[in-house]
Length: 239
Image (cartoon, rainbow, N blue to C red; front, side):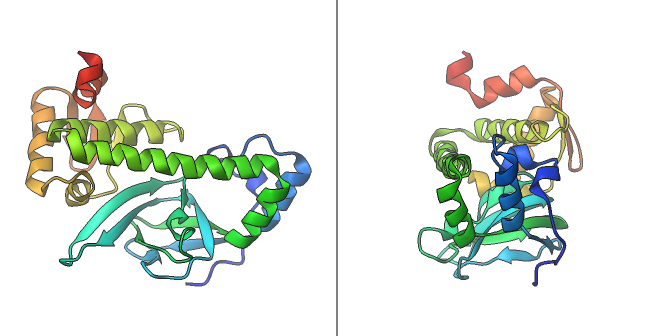
């Protein structure tokens, strides 16, 4: 897919504080605008990049939601993450010069294309940008550790509670409700990410509904007892 030729100004983007440094000087912002010069539309179910593809750019998500996945040796797709507007995707390609996973749009989406060589060059000259790139990478490492904790030591209820809390907190940082969300991913995809079977995800969600923790209407979820959900997600902390 060829990127659009539409010029984008980071300085005018309402997501800039989420995906770019906030303390840039006007001349630095202008140089950043020159770097992020194109945006790319990705239709639902289309790939932004695929496993083995040569790495050339990072992508800042403007609208929409993506999932990253890898294919296991026995041919199954394993979901490794969900990314939303204001987040940067494609960091997996830095280490070996090629992407190690697929990135699939879960809905019609749009990304800003950031050529990595130019980003590296600019970050060497703009300290705030270099620091921000390091923070993004560090955040990805912390996220990976969190997923390992989810898969390694938590029960199904704890995994799903932590997932819902994380999702609604990320959405709230983008101006959405602190208690309601629309699940852009299927229950099967949630199960793949959390290391749970589809039936376990559905059964656990139904249990949350029965206990008055959440209300569910198809993909619309409303958290009705946030404290109970937090206790489920962090039993050792909250008890």
